[in-house]
Length: 256
Image 1: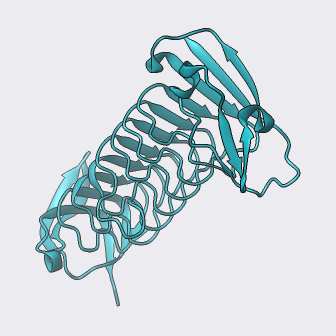
Image 2: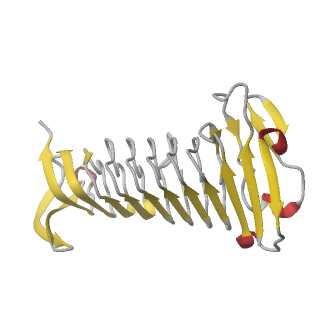
């Protein structure tokens, strides 16, 4: 087992973002020099992080990366992750887990926008909140997350699971506006409340355990149902998109 420990060094300009898509387990198996971008400057990894490597590994699956310090402005960690494990002690910047297909990312704090963007497999666990476009596609795209699992223990921002086309998304808190918009497949669970969920939904299942505020009128009410012994109401739609998705809510209000 190889354990890579990266501790962020103090920076004179802490708000300047760092692009660190190289921080994935397979990078450290190659033994080659590793570089990140700070603004428009390419820097060796050890100018930004204190790096400690313990043990050896022959497979990516046997590499663990532990990251500590002020990581809130560090972007693209775990991009294209296919195996292994990344543990982030605190907050993380935008695009964490872009396009990942395997492995695990654990975030101890909050995550910035596009967490798990267009994810294909693997697992992301965020212990804090996640910002807008969690488990979604990028602007202008037609397909978001297609596989894997994203679990957020706090709240999420707007456009959660936009264009969801597979996989599982679980939010233990509240979601913002337009959760599940353009959803085609997969499973979305929101244990709190949200607003205007699943607009233009074509397939998949979304369950809202709190209140779905401002429900769109283009969902057809099926009737009462029960989940875990609690009463819910089941809808199908979005019929404006000839959709056959399932939207199941604990409580709801319609748009004025």
